[in-house]
Each structure stands twice: as structure tokens, then as C-alpha cells.
Amino acid sequence: MSDRTHHRPMTPGAGFFAEIAGGADPAVLREAGDLAATVLVRGARSSDDPALAERIVHLAETEGLETLAEVWSGAPADTLAGSLWRLLLLRSWVHADPERVAKEYDAGHRRVDVARVVAGVADPPGPEELRSMVDEVLRGIAGGDFAVTLFRAAAFARIVAAGRAALGSPHEEITRMLVLSEQLEAAGQGEMRHALG
Image (tube, rainbow, N blue to C red; front, side, top):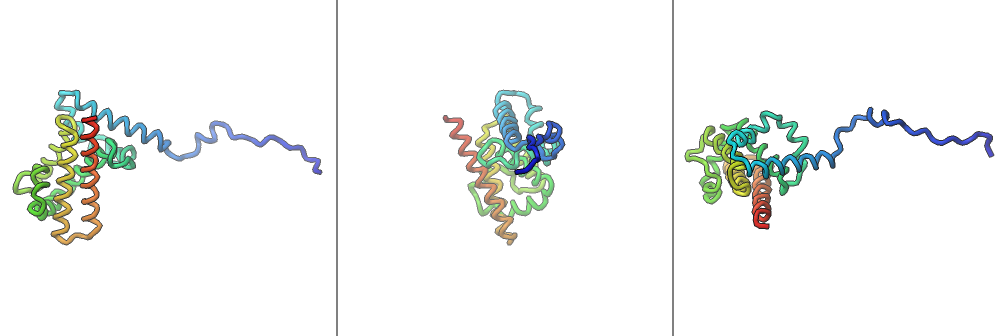
């Protein structure tokens, strides 16, 4: 046997954990993101303020796409947070590269007639028309039926996917846009169920 006395192990003080950098608790961040998305979508419905719709359209520009990614990018596609993230990402892409979007949309819009009607883009679909369309879709969050907003965005993404296929784009790019279309479509169906339930 040893002559050494046993001591209680030392426990770190509260300051020890405060000094460890690890970011926000993912569960708290997800809860905050879900709440913000719910307030944004459901709250916008009860407002007649046209400035609110414009703030939603420009949310990624004012808050920063990176900030919104931290809050919403990990959310499942069929949630309000996940839907908003995908809509804002789609808008950011259209505004960042409208010439490419116009080329892909033009190559696909005659191949997917039903989607073309749902998307509601002027013909011929030039860069400015596509910017206007995607902004109008986002205004639907505040001034229209959110399910319709999601269906319009899904139709737009499907047309772009068809255009990418027609132009011989890499398979990953076509698949990425098809998946986005399917996610938005499923979210729109979920939103319709929510409205009816």
C-alpha cells in the first residue's frame, strides 16, 4: 500500500469552459433558425407592409449569405428554415450570374412546358427578366401563398436543370439543380398540407 493520500480530482472552473472556442450549440442554433424562419414566413402573412417584402427579397444582401448559412443551411429541405435557405441561395445565384442563368433557362424552357408556365418568366428570358422573376418569387413569401412561392422556384430550378442537360453541363451540375427542384417541390407540398391541416 502507498503512503500517498488520495485527493479529489481538481475540477476546472467555469472560466475553463468559457475559454474553449467551439461556436454556438448546434441545437440552440437550429432552434433559433427555425423560430426566425417561422416568424419571417408566418409573420409576413399578417403584414400589409410592402417594405417587408423588399426586406425579405434583399435579406441575403443585408444580413450576409454567410450569416444566413450558419443559421439555415443545415436545416432539412422540408422545413421553413431549409426552404428559405434554398430560396435565398437560388436568388443569390441568379443575381450573381444572370447571363449563365439566362442561357441555361433558355436552353431548358421549351423542354419543360408545364414548369415554364408555373415559373412565370417573361419570354424571351433574358438576364434582367430572370432577376425580376426570382425577386418576384421571393416577394411571394410576404404577399402570396408560400406553397406557390416554393412551386414557382421548383419549376424554375427544373427548367435550369433541363437547360444544363441540353447544353451538356457536367452531370453533378444537372443533378444539383434537379435535387434543388425536388426539395422545393416537396417543401411546397408540405406547406400545402400545413395550410390544410
